[in-house]
Length: 295
Image 1 (cartoon, helix red, strand yellow):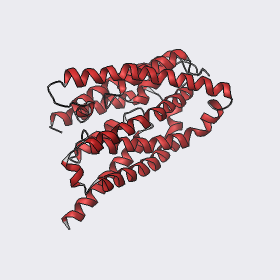
Image 2 (cartoon, rainbow, N blue to C red):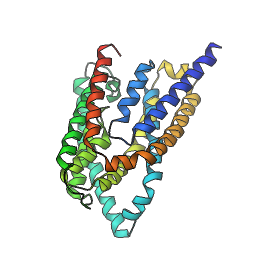
Image 3 (cartoon, rainbow, N blue to C red):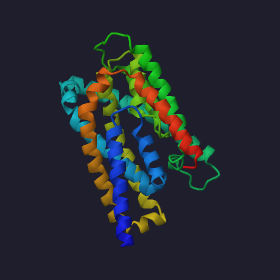
Image 4 (tube, helix red, strand yellow):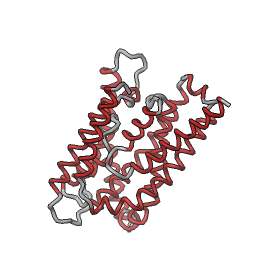
């Protein structure tokens, strides 16, 4: 009976995390921060390989939701002609290259210098630190507020993402990778807004970047988990159960993401962008309070 209860509790945790991920992914409020806080409140360690795999699989589920939801818009813009496809492919490649050039040096500094006293240190070790999550939420909140107030009174332009926007968005995305709480979509869209691109075009481009970024991250986490020797993997009755829960989480986050995208996208497009920044600042205060309480 105890083992059955533990399995149901694990299943409940997966459902909660998947729904939170799916509902929070569209908004620029850092779904990772919300999922990590929920995991900590349920007594889970977000930095462990099996947990980071689950979190990445949840992102994978929302990635599929984004593809389904934005496919019509992408088909009209990105795939309207061979010239349009070549242009967007080059822009996305350029952004992704800058993401790597910015993100990986930061990762190296954290693992080799800041965490040098820890044997086999990995960037994932800092993912469960709510103090860092709070700081990241505050930082992206300020960026969103600034971009929202700066562009809120401006007339809507039909300006697509160009090389300048693609470069800066890719570089800012690289800053987001090592830090949970620094909303990737919030940071990239805010950057594009500051540069003057249209919000709808920025959303399409930002989520296209996410689709490109997710598969290699998933592959890395699968490799990391397979190489780990954590006791929790054995306690979870082996790899089959772990992958089963991760697959369930992917499906649930996909469905929750579709629901959120359907009714939130319009509000996001026509609402006031800075409000999301205010929310991030408020959330950072709450997360910082949890950090001081020992979570």
